[in-house]
Length: 83
Image 1 (cartoon, rainbow, N blue to C red):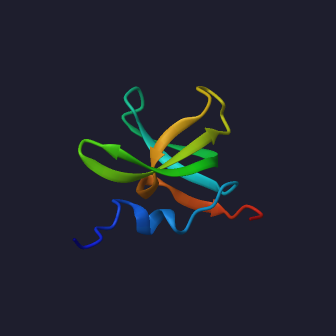
Image 2 (cartoon, rainbow, N blue to C red; image 1 turned 90 degrees about the vertical axis):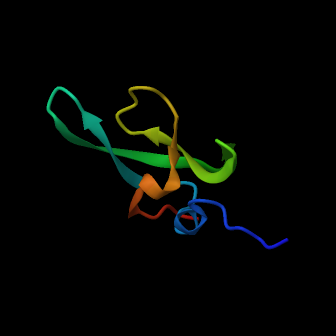
């Protein structure tokens, strides 16, 4: 059996806990994209719909909802933390 890379694994290799990242969410009221910023608190792999994917737990700096889970490929690095 050959090793199959985890979906998003390559993207997750560029992140560490404590990194400041950015992601976009759709805003129906403005009919446009909102930029969000947060800090990575955890990186892990999880089974989603019969496939292992790379997930990041992020604490949004807006603190609207507490920690959220995001697919690592949806994140953009703003500033590397002190790893």
